[in-house]
Length: 116
Image (cartoon, rainbow, N blue to C red; front, side, top):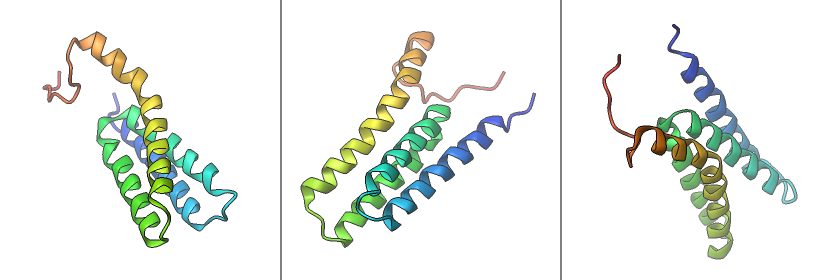
């Protein structure tokens, strides 16, 4: 069985998330919300596929904070957009984590388990 199928989809959705964020930075004011939501959807999809993708989502949130700091946006606007990004990612990922919680009866799914 091929073990690279998860990595391929992970790379695909992480790349789409980063490209959507780049388009968010480069777009006009009326298109910014669309690109940020798309970036959150792609980050959530990648994060649902593999836990290691959390670094991608955290990097995009950090880049979003830096973007608002550089452009001197209000703190309320920056926090609102960051919270919206995190909420979209959490809504996409939560069904998988709830399922893993009930199937493994473990509070944390980040346990290192030996391959079988």
